[in-house]
Image (cartoon, rainbow, N blue to C red):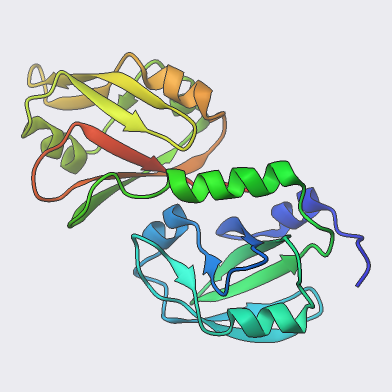
Length: 232
């Protein structure tokens, strides 16, 4: 297979959602992007259909575990089909109905990309055990550059239970302490204030992006895990 892929072209062709998995040399599973797994949980089945650049079809088994989503059955077979013996990037473009377009880059990943991938797997781990709630927000460029973020009513109501003045956003790159702005008059509103812009800047948010805010379901907690997709 010739190394003639352009990563930017691949990303631009992706529909609905894209993420990457680095094929790890000694792993028999593929680690799935947690943000994607949560965002599309209702849509994803335990069997995924993958199609490559040449139209070849492969079926893999998905464990449907939101704490540690992985591709399990069929991953080793995929490795053999594409002769993957080292560290390689595989782009997944989600089409819908548990169907994906995949592009496998035959060249070996750079050490920095491998290190980032392994660090991201660790960073995306849940903050706590037990049941979790997920609040999903689709950011537009204005929200990424704003000094505050308006929260949906259900997320605001969750945070109000704890009477917090501050919350801590745990992102893939940085944890930021943010002011919580809760108002009842003249109308009820909930916002993340100072700290929000710092959080967005630290993570390079400047265009439309899906975010997942993961919190403790058992009780209101000011520690909030923020998940989003990432390519390496």
